[in-house]
Image (tube, rainbow, N blue to C red; front, side, top):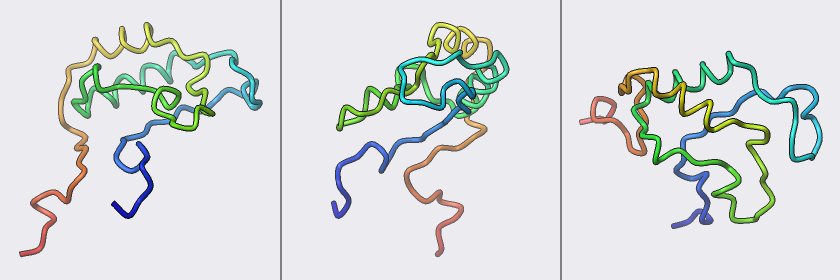
Length: 103
């Protein structure tokens, strides 16, 4: 309650390196590499997060000023995501895990 309302207080964020031609405030750039899409799909699959829980900064930004991700192919990402088995190898928690709690 003491923090302002923001998705940044509870969301898990993954960022991709923007290509050099994207270092501006435009709406597009040359896009991301196949290796970036593949790595992103792999790491998301390892979290066990379902595709219906994946969103963008643009869609959750209350200020309306964010436009990222720019030049991102959701079709390509979701196609690659389906090629990896969903696991929970990378734990995402909003609370202290039981094994880290002190008695």
